[in-house]
Image (cartoon, rainbow, N blue to C red; front, top):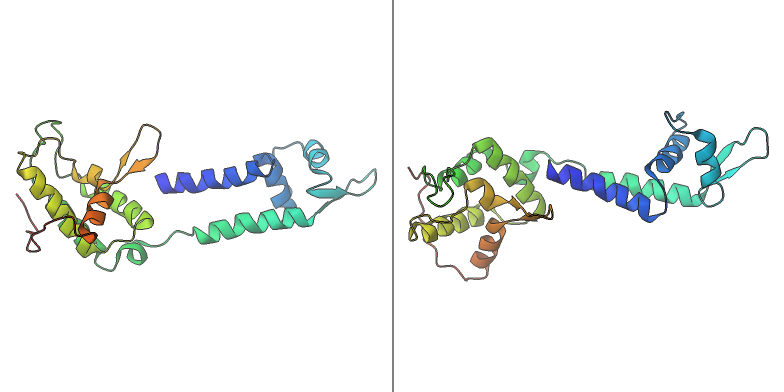
Length: 207
């Protein structure tokens, strides 16, 4: 999933900003946990880290001891993952999130979009994945989401659904630079700003 990949890249960015390689941080972390690191050149990494990140006892044992700089970085990485600990779907989207996701998806008509030949109503599992990402990145209620979505579909109904997003891509779509764009977020924002005229009595099911 994209968010998980983004979290991993943030971790690697933090390490490289400190001037460390992944192997070097792995060595420091193993040392902190009293674990023997595998598949790395121990002596090479110890000599590279000696000074700022650890101190070495005199020959021949070369016993490494972490510096305060190492402890600080390890705590930063650990607190980062605690901060990004995965929340359950219920925590993110509410107790009735499966029903609400279905309500969202059914706002889209059961047709193929004329200009793309894609089904307007995407597979619900794909939609649910996108909605989880949406709730991780935006703070809009289901009420706002459903009203904004209904306004969007009504707008494109006037255009015979030409160039309308599918229910999947309306939630999120990946740009060429691998970032994500959310039309849903834009429409939710317009709704909250009072820039949309909406009919609050939208239908749950559109066939």
